[in-house]
Each structure stands twice: as structure tokens, then as C-alpha cells.
Amino acid sequence: MSRSLRPTAGAFLLAFAGLALLLGWWTVAAPGLSARDDNPRNVFAEQRIRRGAILDRAGQVLAESVPLSGTFSRRYPLTDTSPTVGYYSINYGVAGLEEAFDAVLRGNADSIDRLLHRPQTGRSIRATIDAELNAELTARLTEPGALVVLSVPDGQVLAATSFPAYDPNTLDADWKTLSADPTAPLLNRVTQGLYQPGAILQTVLLAEGLERQAITLTQAQPQLAAPVSLASLTLNCTHVTQPITTVVDAYADACPALFADFGVALGEAELISITQKWGLTEPPPLEIRTAAAPTLTLALSTTVALQAYAAGQGELTVTPLHMARVAVVIGSGGSMPAGRLVSEIEQPDGTWREANSIGVSERLIGVSTARSVLAAMKTIDQVAGHGGAAYSGRKKLSWFIGLAPADAPRYAIAVLLEDPPANIAAPAEDLGRAVLQTLLP
Image 1: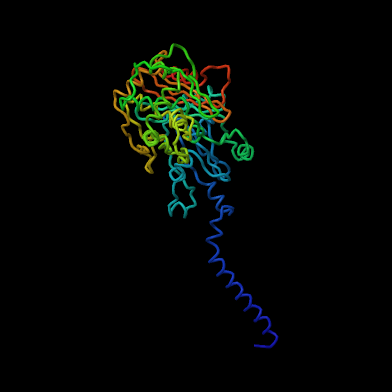
Image 2: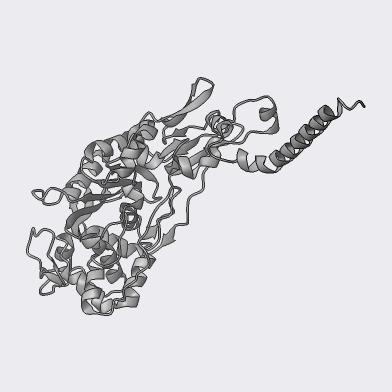
């Protein structure tokens, strides 16, 4: 080799060596880089997935993927179902049913699909939601709060709405506003909003008192309408419509004294055991995310602490879904149902398979006890129910649980209104009864 070519050959050798080192580095680093969320190829591949549809119980589309310039965009025709259906976003992830059934909805691309560059296609799911009923609930709920209707006795979620909510079709554009909004429109108040139960806890305590034969509905007691003083808070009957002389009267008008005293008689261990038995200290079983109160941190070591806990003004907080399930127990003859929000899942061959319930049905009280509580509920036009108030700081909460038809319940409801208008005596009860009336034949 001539001396004039040696520098050129050396340069080529160095270039090849550098290329080899670079290729080696890419071999090691490429997997990590390809897995990054901001990798444009990954984003494009995600957008090319045709997610399965989410349907209501009658087959009406609640969420679907529509073609858009070689990719697919998620569309939500009925925005009032957003608290349950949730959202699917390239930027902000998934929530609700979109999250719970993400693996089914996105499907899997096999080797042939990848070889032929065919889009990944998911399978559909059928929810237990009744789209028409859900729209009815949403139209009626115009104040911050939550409303949920379950079927009796199986506890399927027929409708659920949370106010305020959001439009999943414009989620990406609205995200900053939604996430900063102090009214928390992204929170599903039905399944994750935790509230003081207040007087609505009386249904559980009444059932347990009857089951233990510690309470008799017709027994007369003095001072049933007496106020209960809890440090800086004084509790009174939610509304007095009659002379309060018996346990039935006290329950009908949501008077706290009887139940506060019952809590003292039970003591800490039994009182907490009851709330655990009824599932109030655990997230309710359901396919989507649910919530429960943190573990009790303060001992119920004083009379006032026991009274507060039994009156629903202690550390225990519950979701509207918790209380709707309590109503199902009364309406079903004493059994707590499993959770169900999805009834069927589409199979790869196009057929449909029944989806599994979450958890199992469990008997909590006897049939006669459940019937006695149902009979004690205030019944108006075939709607039986119990309403009452609770207090969270300076905010007054309005609660109602109900069943219809009263003689053979098929529907259970829970209503929670945050800080409702002061000029309406029982806003949650009025709303709940009106909704259940629409379900009667």
C-alpha cells in the first residue's frame, strides 16, 4: 500500500470501529428507548389500535373507536355515563371501565397481524348500565352529589351519575382546567366520594338491633327525639312529622338519640365489627375503582366518641355505592350481593361470554329482620326509604336510600347531595323518591 493511501485507510478503519461501537450501544439502549412513552412510534402504534366498544345493557354504544386518517379516535356518544365508562387518552391514561377492561378493549396483535401491518383490534364489553335511566338520573342531578341505582337482589349497577362531571370527548383539551377545578369533576362521587353517613347509618344499626333482639320496633321509649350533643355539634331529628313515641317513629324521622345510645351499649369492638360486617370499611366490590375510609385511628374510648360513631359523625365515611348496597340487603331479604358493572364480554370468535361478578353474595341478616326494617321504612306511593342528614365540617349533607316497589323491591337507590339548599327539607329524599317513581309500572 502506498504511503498516500495509509491515512485514508486509517480513517476508514476508525469510522468502521466507531460505527460498530454505535451499533453495539443501540443494541443495548434501544429496548429502553423504544419503551419510552414519548417515543413517536409507540404513540402512533397506540393510535392505530381499534379498541372494542363499550355497550349498555341493550347494546347502545357508550364508547367506540372511529377511524381518523389511518388511526382511531375514541368517541363517547353519551357523555352522561363518563363517571362509569371513564376515558381513554394518549396523554392522560385511562379511567373507569376503559381502565378496568383495558386488556380486553385493546386486544392483542398476533404475529400475522404484525407481519401484514394490520391494526390491533380489541373486543367489546356489555355493561349493566341502562343508558336511558342513566340519562334520567343525570338530568335530575343538578347539584354536587351522586346518585346510583342497583337492581335487587343481584346488585347490578343500572345507573350511576356524579355531579359535576366532564365530557370525555374533550378531555385532553380540558384536562388542566378539570384537574385544577376545586369541585373535582374528575372524581366519581358514586364509587370514590367519601362522606359522613350521619343518619343514613341508622338502617344498619336498626337491622343489627333487631337481629340481636336488642331493639323492638314497637317499644316505647322516652326522650327518643332528644338532641345528641357531640362536642361542637348538636344532632336533632332530621324532620319531625309526628309524635316520636316508638322506635319506628324515631327511625322514620331520623332521630339520633336511640342509635347513639345503642352504639354506647354495643361498645367499641361490636360497633366497629358491625360496620366491617356490612362492608362499610372496605372498598365495595366492583370492576372499576372504589374507595373506603382509612383504618380507624382514634379509639372509641369515651361515651361521646361511641355516640359520634353510631350517629355517623365519627371517623367512618362511606360512598353512595356503600349505602346503595345496604339498601339491597334490606330489599333482598338480608343478603349483600356481589358487585357487577359488566354483564358480558365479546370473545375472539365474535360470541359473547357472561362476565364474572366481583366478590360473592353473603347473607348478613335474617329474612325476618330485613322484612321488619323494610316495613319500618317510610313508604309513599310504593317507594320505601330512609332519609337523613349528616355534617362534614360546616357543610350539611343530605342522604337517602330507597327501594321500589315497596312490597317486592326490584330497585335500590342511594342519593347524596353536598350542601343542598337550606329551604328544602329533604332534598335527597325528594330526588330519590322521584327517580324510583319513574321505574314503577
